[in-house]
Length: 168
Image 1 (tube, rainbow, N blue to C red):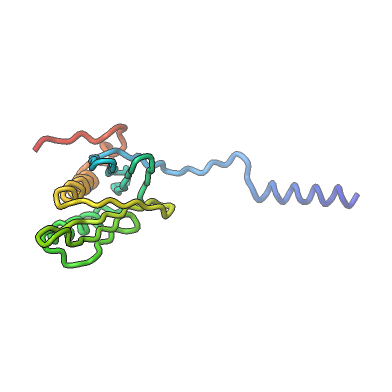
Image 2: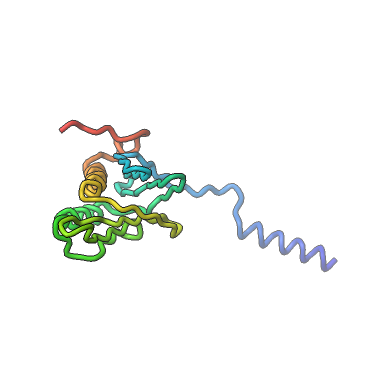
């Protein structure tokens, strides 16, 4: 008898603690590709979300990384700061959230090179070395993502497929 009462009590407690059939509505984020670049074996893509945020997807050979969700304003500020410093870097490190680290270095007496480290949400990272042209292309890709996040309407961001590039 005690076992039957204990089982009935445990079943009642579990049933009360976990409602059956109750659905929690979670807003699903829609991601759209804005622009992608390729530098040798390295591929990068910036996506814009239906909540007007950005993320960076990168691939080096078969290794794929998905970066953190980033606010458009912070990406814009970081991108502009680094772009303005390309000829004469004022910092040893340019850090964008937990997603991107750019470290300028003297490639030779007249040229600056850039070590770019990208990381994913799980802590894995990959590095590439690029020149000024490569980092400019990377920064341009991010700038286009910022423009998409700030100018596209909610309805446009909820559509499927990549964002169409508008001619200038």
